Length: 117
Image (cartoon, rainbow, N blue to C red; front, side, top):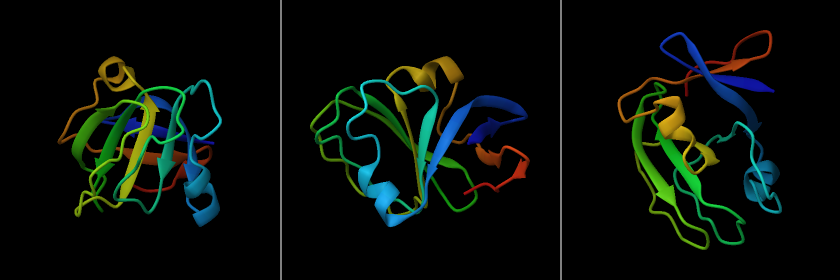
């Protein structure tokens, strides 16, 4: 378990998908998502086989959000060359969190900082 933190405030809990197998599985088979999924490394995503719409944030090597999109089910994303990781959350989460392009997001492990991107 990890936490997404921006400007000193916790946005959400997060699961890390930082192995090939975990990234490939992603959110497939889930009906709900509390918090977020962090895919690292990652430059693009798809929603083929997904059961709900997603908010997707692309972060650069410094943890800066370079692009956000809301993706409907069964769509292919476009690669974002500057992205080094992707945060996925249930559609509407980013609005609740106040997450925007230009924000810096840290991924903090339960007992310490896992780093920005």
